[in-house]
Length: 429
Image (cartoon, rainbow, N blue to C red; front, side, top):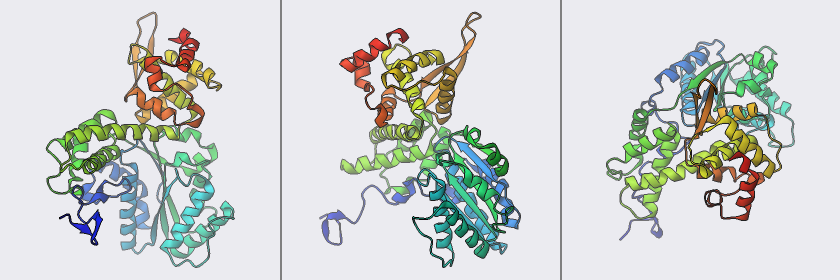
């Protein structure tokens, strides 16, 4: 008879696949001995904020890197250790974390900071959830800092999602402007290496930050990360070779530890849903496809429409052509035609190049400089690092682009819409 929870046959009290599933959750911050391949990055971040543990002003820092390279994990790990070290030196230090993909306006971000500070202290004043301006939230922040803290580390994750960067000036100049005597150290996190170029010159100067770059994990590091998650599963549930395959697939595609963990989790879910007693390599392969689609959709969700059209143009070139790589000019020619179809004014070829460069940094495409001989000079060749059908599906999730041809239509040319596209773009093929 099955072991049931609370006597209810609908629920099992014992999970046959997972043991400590929290180890596979994206937001989980593991113990220090589970952090792999980031010793140098830990030291670098600690060097910037470490002064706070001695009662001195910390540096502000911006951390860049692709998704899943440990930016958020290391930031929270170092900030927590700095907080503990400061408190051991009788310095009241706080740590605040804001996910700017959700708190994507200055008002929302400052409200979250104020509420987090109130939750960590005995602050008695009421902080409204709505109906007040940004400056009132700042006033609560300054009062709490002045009353309860000597220093605070503020982590702004996915900082590029904020609608403006004024919060950086407010935080970095708070002490100078006599808003509070507490030292404030800001750790900004972004997977957009060009974020600094978007900052107002005054804000960039005031923020005065250092820049750190996190590189993707290699296969051996991913294997160790996966090994450190084995106890998320019941004993002997993972078949031989599953960890190695999971790490190899993640390393080949993107070096993204978060997605590698997601693949492992999804494989476990597949095993459980199908009633399997073990997680096999077949489960890993199926889970990898699901995770890859999710990854592309996540990376393109916040991209500009021109970035999406650039990716779609490259994907459609690959699907309808006979090559895997295309020049910037060839992609731009297809892009101009696509823009006509969706009634969107195209950006310049140089603008498209910058969009492709950003996608290369994110790991969606790869760009290689090559030579075309004395008459042609050197040029860039771009290729997708994922299946073009994933790109097409992700781009079409944008409601303004949902009428673009699907992968099947591009591949088979079996719809009137596709025939229209090919007719309009025939000069670019």
